[in-house]
Image (cartoon, rainbow, N blue to C red; front, side, top):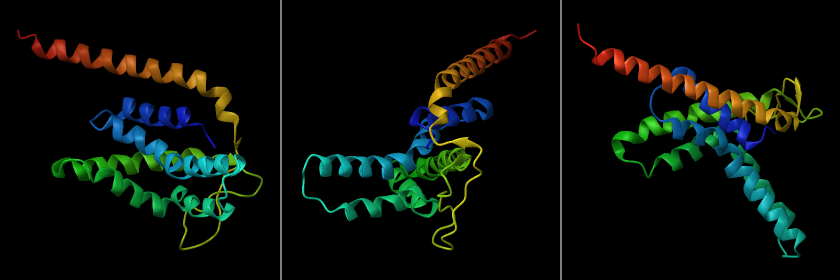
Amino acid sequence: MPDLLTHACTGLLFKAATGGRHVSATVLGTALPDLTSRVPIMGIDLLIRLGVPIPIEAMYPWAVLHMPVANVAACGLVALPFREDQRADVFLWLLVGSALHFLADVFQAHHGEGYFLLFPLTTNTYELGLIGSETTVLYAPALIVITVVAWAARIGWARARGRQGRMRP
């Protein structure tokens, strides 16, 4: 899977290009599928390895949170604590970030495993197989630099526009 840093950069790059509010919600959305599914699975696996008597089957239900259908529900739960007038926007941008997450994931090759993108409608898996599942780790440093440059340009452009708006003939 692309690492969380790579996923976060996709959200940051998207918002650098498109602008607007809710950058944090978009970036959180890019990480949400992994945070809600992979992290609990890793925690349970660690506990099992440490000798805690947890059945291995305890890991299985968490996998559904890395599927779009359950991720929509996770986005809704994350948006709930926000003020009512912000909730719909936060939910939308969490979904956009999650869509970016799944788009990045589908580029990978998992030796035929793929992702259940349309579950529960079908159990077909999807992947494009263009990059290895850990390839993004190698490119993360360059992607971070590109993201910083994109945001520096965006902030500089916004400041320049702000100065022009204040100047009157």
